[in-house]
Image (cartoon, rainbow, N blue to C red; front, side):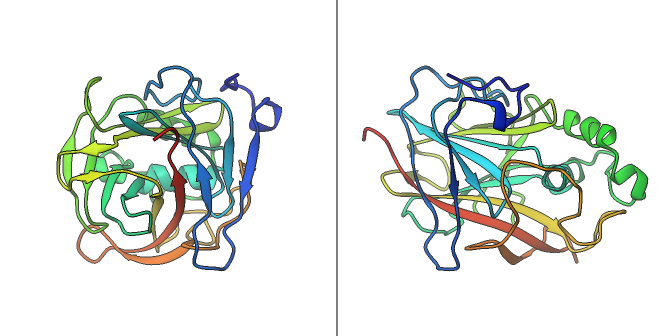
Length: 265
């Protein structure tokens, strides 16, 4: 049965498998499952059940499902340092139809910096470490909002506001200290860049991180004592220097790829 979003992971009756990204080049592999009921992309994980996978390189849990039309993804983290990175720079979800780690088709959920809001940078150590302030920032990014369709990590892409019937959907949610990112993409996409998905599918999670630490952080990842849903960063595809969006913006990018075996196809 689906876990109650108000209950920490350790207290749910969900099978959790830890995916360790060893030092080798091969990405961790996981199996998608066919959902027992419709999955609504609303930033909550109440539609999700069965197996959850821990990506220790990004300190998140991941669940993947597919039906005959769509691939669905649910990412959850309680780690406050990861949540702050999402607030500042957003999160990117990437698809490689050939099962590798090429950034071919991406969905970016922009952070506060990317939307021209009063950004959370440079407000001092006390503000940066405040769970209440972080919760307010995350709350401002939840619900239906604009997303970017991208084909390059350096590109702003095409901005869309997904409707209920849109082929590509993505939404953030935040509840009881848990950040949830849900997304769906078609198995057969006729937009740009076009693709058709078959097993295996390369699925990437990317967190652009500024190389200038936020106030109160001693490194780009931060040192919040956030607990969370996994271990530390590192491993295959763990840290990679990436080009920043905007003039002169250099970023240290945290990135993890997994290989997904689709179900029932």
